[in-house]
Length: 271
Image (cartoon, rainbow, N blue to C red; front, side, top):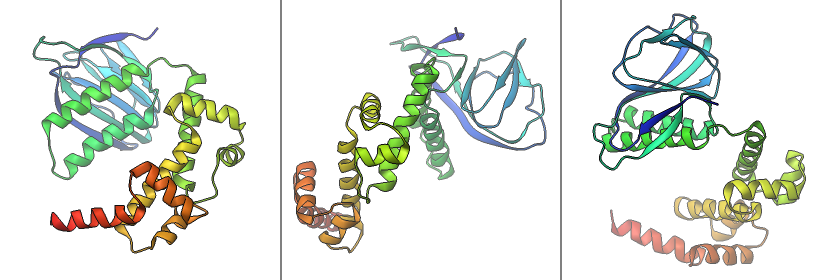
């Protein structure tokens, strides 16, 4: 059973976040901080101690360091090691507490989601868009993500990964003659099994998500290209333009032409 830390996620205050990429030189400095620190290893292995405990932190694992306890590296950085960190101060107030149990050290249930949160934080900072309220919300989301998906089994991870592969396949091949059966053949799985896994994780069917992706891409092309509607229909994987009209209107409540003309006029009026 993983060690759990009780964290009040209300009123936390983010200090700073960052990413480290190793060239194979140096060791993590030894220090004592007044903040919590979330560490997420995205590649390689990090070797850290905290107090009297040593941790070997491989790819897609998180470690939560606590304030006022000495930590540092006990082996040199490996070449190719990459990890993200987030420092935050504990809740300054006990009013309306939102206490969750966060594993001290754990394999991430959804590493792609953790990576997405970190990248969002760092991108905004790089663009000069520092927003403490957003940073605090992102840190809270990060803690909940680590806590909510801790301890899932390897079987569950495998199913989750498979569902993610299906969604990625849809996003990459939506313009093709795509179906649940075709995706199953491409990935080497039984169609019924694939459908069950996908619906369990995303709450919708594969065929529905194929249509959702096609409509999303059609919306983008209607607003940001000069292709005519027949061309957009074909580019988004619809065999017949009449069917494209029906699916689009069912999804958006208006025809593709009305969508393009209506939002174009709205855009021009707001310039």
